[in-house]
Image 1 (cartoon, rainbow, N blue to C red):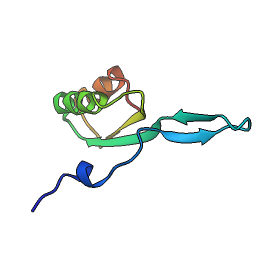
Image 2 (spheres, rainbow, N blue to C red):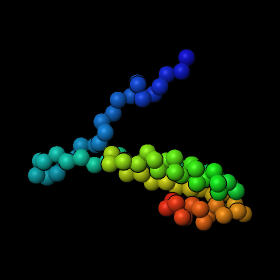
Image 3 (cartoon, rainbow, N blue to C red):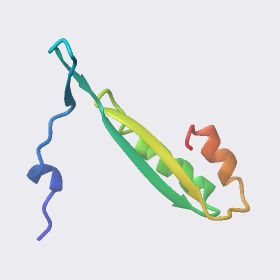
Image 4 (cartoon, rainbow, N blue to C red):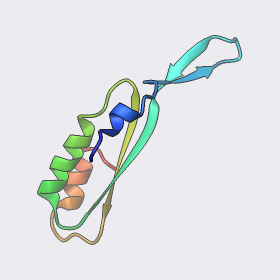
Length: 84
């Protein structure tokens, strides 16, 4: 019996932060996504674009690619897509 986690977890879109003046402001959630890879540059591009599609004003998104000794163009693809 599978249930959708998003139906069970309701979180605010942003984290409230209070400044010294007492005025509430909001900031986005900070999310890091780690993508491990080795010699999968074509699939890496698809994976990174999929994560980038989630980006929005309520997320501070960081994508980290961990390359395990690729001999193809994985490093160049990762850099071109703006990952770390």
